[in-house]
Amino acid sequence: MAMIAKQCPDIDVHVVDLNQARIDQWNSDELPVYEPGLDEVVREARGRNLKFSTQVDQAISEANIIFIAVNTPTKSFGIGAGRAANLEFIEKCARQIARCSKGHKLVVEKSTLPVRTAEAVKRILSSSANGATFDVLSNPEFLAEGTAIQDLLNPDRVLIGGESKEAVERLAQVYGRWIPRDRILTTNLWSSELSKLTANAFLAQRVSSINAISALCEATGADVDEVAKAIGTDSRIGPKFLKSSVGFGGSCFQKDILNLVYLCEHFGLREVAQYWEQVVIMNDYQKRRFSERIVRTMFNTVSDKKIAIWGFAFKKDTNDTRESAAIHVCRDLLEERARLVIYDPRVPESQIRSELEHAFSDTVGGLGEKHKKLIETNVTVVNDAYAAAHEAHAIAVLTEWDEFKSVDATRIYNGMRQPAFIFDGRNILDLEKLNKIGFEVHSIGRSAK
Ligand code: UDX
Image: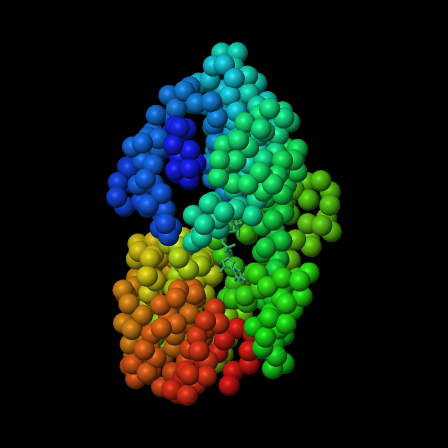
């Protein structure tokens, strides 16, 4: 919305949320999310044609176009728990829009939704007591965190699905202010809804595919980065999204695939559901394999050993930790009674601790006093990479922050216990250089030298 406001100074954009604290942050100098370039975009438009408030009813009644961008987390209860999307917030929005609207409005689904959700949204909207009428459009968002501003300024495509040609055209005109028309694709509603889930499923599948091959590389002496390069030069495969890692994270991939799996099951497509579920199973395996490798390599015990964790965010250039592979690896290592010293340049200590508590809540028996105590005593959060590695038995690189590539490795080595192990979960470090200094380096998809 900030980008629309920036690019279209004549359009008034009013962002509303029920959460006053959140809105206060959007109105302050300290935005609630870290995203390179976002501050400038918000600063340029805020107070001109971009407004943040909690006046939801008023914003609805004044708007011509309403974007629904509430979250659709995986359901944690009842039918479809652990798989289906929780559509409670979408439905509440639709009801509120129906209640506060007069005249004709465009309602745009921006949230990622199961295919055919628009049907439910339309039915709820049609119950409007004030005789308001609506067109419902699907306009999924494809930006990735860390590169959001570039992705919004110069997207590969914008997708708009809808039944009414005029309504689709009205929204296309907004994006058309800065995006070439041939990159604005229009489809029917259901194709648009399904394309978002499919795009994320395909992207996640590529990561799981290369990660599956990484296990075979470690067993055979092949190098996964060399394999990725070799296959990526085939123009039919392409080079992107072939970086083997400790596992994908983020708020979208797992949630959207599980949602897709649920949909397939709902429509009786068992084989299709199983096919896609394997992408998530492979990702869980990759995370678990990484922690097991650490324990196995360190003489089958990490109990009471100090392990530096470099990076906690699910990828670089974001402070987002949702579904981050780091959470799973840290939980496994804590179960083994390791002492963790965690450093991430952007993630605050309180967030790291709460993610770890949450991770234990998902284990059998839930978060007990024992685990709370374990996190309290065995987790330290520090604010630089050197402090984390000081007197550590090992370093685990879990996020590919650029600063990890340029540390003074000799200084790190001299401060560590010997043998000094590095487990590079992102394959970003200079293996040869580190080996020369004396480190024992284990990376993804390579057998250790
Ligand atoms: C993703 C989609 O890319 C985006 O189009 C959609 O709108 C939202 O979901 P995001 O989750 O922000 O975006 O990040 P993305 O760059 O896709 O990375 C997801 C995860 O996959 C990260 O944990 C990343 O580290 C991992 N990844 C990605 C790899 O391990 N290897 C790769 O080659 C690429």
